[in-house]
Amino acid sequence: MAGETVITVVGNLVDDPELRFTPSGAAVANFRIASTPRTFDKQSNEWKDGDALFLSCSVWRQAAENVAESLQKGMRVVVQGRLKSRQYETREGEKRTVFEIDVEEVGPSLKYATAKVTRAQRSGGGGYGSQGGGQAGGGYSGGGAPAADPWASSGPAEGGQAASGQGGSAPAGDPWGAPGVGGSDEPPF
Image 1 (cartoon, one colour):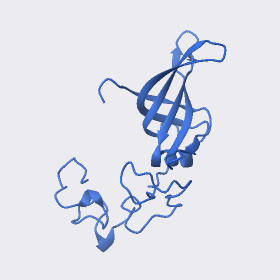
Image 2 (cartoon, one colour):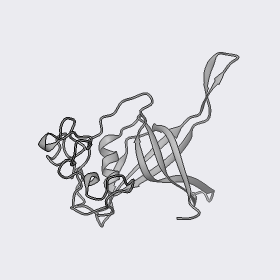
Image 3 (tube, helix red, strand yellow):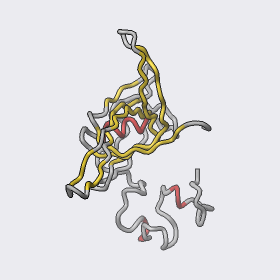
Image 4 (cartoon, helix red, strand yellow):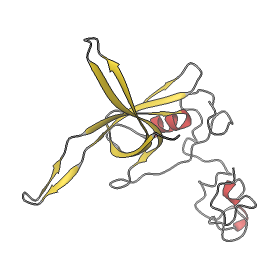
């Protein structure tokens, strides 16, 4: 939408993500990140930490379940979303303003760590925006991957074709290998 402030922040998780469900069954995960600027002081020849920026973040639906399953306190993450401000009044009558991020994308920072990405199965059979079954932990592959999962193949695909798709047809179930997609940067859906 126009007029929204989109922001990308790199920081560390202050707590474990908290996964909850709305009465309608939509998953929401809340977490906080701390982003601390660092500068190198040439006179003392050492790194100096600046003031930490603490931001509350919320992520919805399948991404919320994936965040709760994958991330934990202390992990360095990259968060992208819409920056929102909210005003409220304390019990003592003081007016406060807080800034929060409605998260669109989140993932581990790979600057100082490695990660193994496993594609999660969708629960509920719906497309983007589906509510799923509202099951905590449901829809995960549990370490294994279905036979038609193109993310899981590390060797040759079905029929001896190369997994890169350069040897002819794409593996079965590969949405990027759909007819008419070759040479186009647009997804087939």
